[in-house]
Image (cartoon, rainbow, N blue to C red; front, side, top):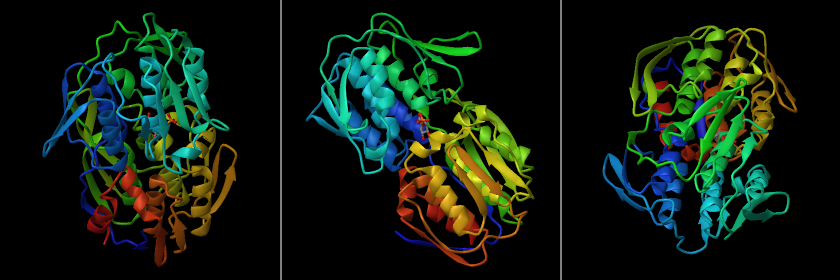
Length: 428
Ligand code: S3P
């Protein structure tokens, strides 16, 4: 799909955000593990969360859709059985890595496959610790999918310090640990998103400045009854769009405000962004708020290393904000961006450069010379089939001197199927 984007008029109105992809996928996987029925409201239509539903269906969960909510009848930790032997995780790293933990723990034999993008994402990071726990897991050469999990005896518990601040890795080990008689502990030196421990109500402790999360078979797993909040990672596109397009004033009701997800607000505010947070409340276990954002001039910013894991999915769109700021902005310590749905450092480097923005792509980050509010060049962009790159390129194109073309724009549906119609409704 190709989309043409022209320089925008002021962005006005209100956007109904897609439900949070990260929370939704977990709600589905954790509902499978529960012995009771879960009722999930506002479940997303986006591709990744739908993949999670089809995967749990293959493992025995009964998914009953209603108009506004879905019901999932779980099978419990001891009831998992696979129909067939191949599970297709589509584009979703979260589904593949979390499901690997569940399958390794439960001893269900399976092969996990994914699309071309997922098939080039590193899985050694989960294979090594799962093997240490006693799982038998093999992959294609180099540690890439497909992953083959073979039936094995009970897993050994482990105390594991995360070598990389990855919520998918943390969750994978904790889910495997749920099948062990003794306690598995994951030590988290640098915080990353906490949805797994929150939604499963896992014990969380603090030792020597590190967070330690535990799991074991003795923990009763709650059913997942919740309303999925608006996806903060989707909100970030509009926060940047309305900030850089002059005269904009946009509302984002019911935006997820989990503090391990919304650090991009702090970063944008350091840049001078005009974001008002109203009506903070709790929906299920998650804080939500109504956000208002108005356009303003930005100054350059340096992202702090501890901010990288808690703003990881927002870094591409933050690099667009940096492109229009006054001065030189820096993202460092973000090599993880190279292992997402695309190599996001190189993808954003190309996109910014094509739009006439001076950018240096480093091994672990970007150095961006801001244009102090001056529009960029209209051009042709390729999303590299990465949803966040497609949407970042589109927002960048709102602040250019003509019409830009976004190729492979359909990738946005992985997390935000209504992105293009929302863009039309607020920007033109
Ligand atoms: C996710 C964790 C992050 C994030 C991804 C979703 C999750 O990945 O980039 O979009 O749902 O746990 P990593 O764990 O690889 O950092």
